[in-house]
Amino acid sequence: MTAAVSQSPVRHAVYTSEALFPLTVDQYHDLIRAGTLSEADPVELLEGILLYKMPKNPPHAAITTAIRDAIALLLPPQYHARSEQPVTLPDGEPEPDAAVVRGRAKDYMSRHPGPDEVPLIIEVADSSLDRDRGIKLRSYARAGIREYWIVNLIENQVEVYTDPDPVASGGPTYRGKAVYVQGNSVPLVIGGNRLGDMPVSAMLS
Image (cartoon, rainbow, N blue to C red; front, side, top):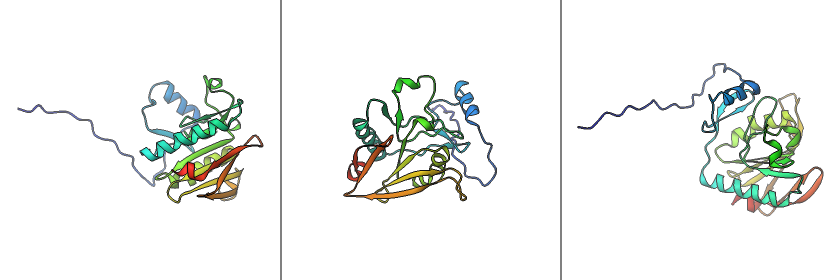
């Protein structure tokens, strides 16, 4: 006789046109401190709404790691590169695929870096392209992140957004956009200094 196995119902993300309950960053941190949310929960706070993180396939994970490592080699001692770690914005706490952060990693033992300490954020986009061009771009522009790259694996290009406009009439955006394709290199400019160039081919494959 086979014993019956009790299983909890599988929970799925639900898309709805109904109003959602917003969370402040402080409320989000309270949930983490209380253990209501843990590192195992696949969520992040964007524009005051708790959203499921997009899943990452092996190419996405490998390219993210390669980009972080390549940037780290170009950075001066007063900056370091992070990967998939939180950045605290006024209305959310995204976990970008890669970021350049001022100072040493251990400077952030008691808090996550804020927008003034993050001159560059990078998202690697495949299934997440709409989110990276939409809610994440708005969030980074609203917070004044100076430069934002989307490594677009769908269209085989790197989109570089500069000069944030937090109060644009159509919503926060970037005034500057440049698209780099195979054969191009993206200049890595941090703190007004050009530190080197990132070949597009190295970021896409």
